[in-house]
Image 1 (cartoon, rainbow, N blue to C red):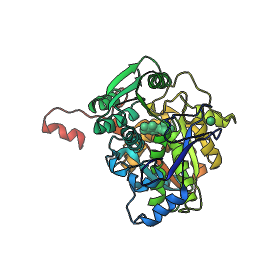
Image 2 (cartoon, protein in one colour; image 1 turned 60 degrees about the horizontal axis):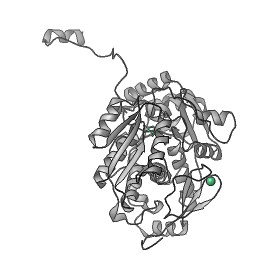
Image 3 (cartoon, rainbow, N blue to C red; image 1 turned 180 degrees about the vertical axis):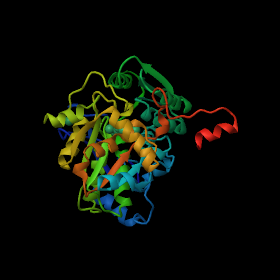
Image 4 (cartoon, rainbow, N blue to C red; image 1 turned 120 degrees about the vertical axis):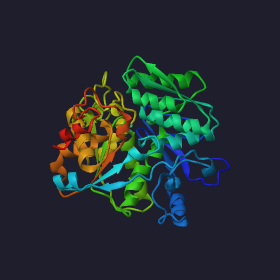
Length: 404
Ligand SMILES: *Cc1c(COP(=O)(O)O)cnc(C)c1O
Ligand SMILES: [Zn+2]
């Protein structure tokens, strides 16, 4: 590392084979295909925590800057992401018999937790002087990086699969990025963007090391919001598995710097129509096997070949948690229930964790549980007819039909 005054990130290391990479060499993953971890000098990190007004500062994404690989904080690209509420559930928690909280990520600047990762990724791209970036996305990551790239003045192209919801595409276009619609799956988009990065001078964004670092703040905030205590369970929807991996990493790091002693169990939930990570756990294999084509209402977790699948599995196994699938119907029912009984509007993928909680409710009885609601309901229009809508003529006599 050169001049930076806050030297706390040390190196990158493969989470699978342990091979090390220097931080000034751009590497997206290891030659063995394993995901790379950023390793810090945790003595130094602890020093920063003790020095700063850390404990008194309210929880938000950049409060935990000492756990990010950023050299110059004055150049960070941020919309004040994170700092999302941890909400106590009266209705669903009581029904199940657990102490339940929702971490509601829908109020992030672009409506999903992806903004936490984007702030770090785009800050790094800006730091390195990149003028052009690309990413593969099922919609939310694309919207998020487009917004941050616009603020940093960086050209951005987003590769999306052909069945991407129209509202998500509209959001990406709204931030001025180019949308490239690929006649194929999300996994196909991923392969193409990695190829773009190899062939042209275009920086690759996605579920790579810097994003994982940013998404750790979900975990930091949960523990902070519990006054440095941990819940029994954290339930997380899994697409690429990066959020699951990032939350686990955040907890290990908090333990490393001695802010906590205990660790929660991590529960990962996938959709029946795309469950490579859950399948690998059930079949007791180390690495998920890619599926051909995802088929699920939960479009944000339709990742056929999950980038951090092995690492998410490692997190679940190490924490002694578990992983299960839910059906589209269970997801839509949970989405409805979250709106009606908790006043929380989630997109289908955001309701997947709650669907898992409800389906496996017996395992959570009497426990302290956090469900991550990953994305806002406004991100996706309902499918098909909406029979709940009552239509009336513009005539006051009609009101009697509504209030009989
Ligand atoms: C990206 C995303 C997920 C899945 O996160 P991974 O890190 O890919 O596992 C879940 N829900 C929403 C709303 C998302 O945008
Ligand atoms: Zn490796």
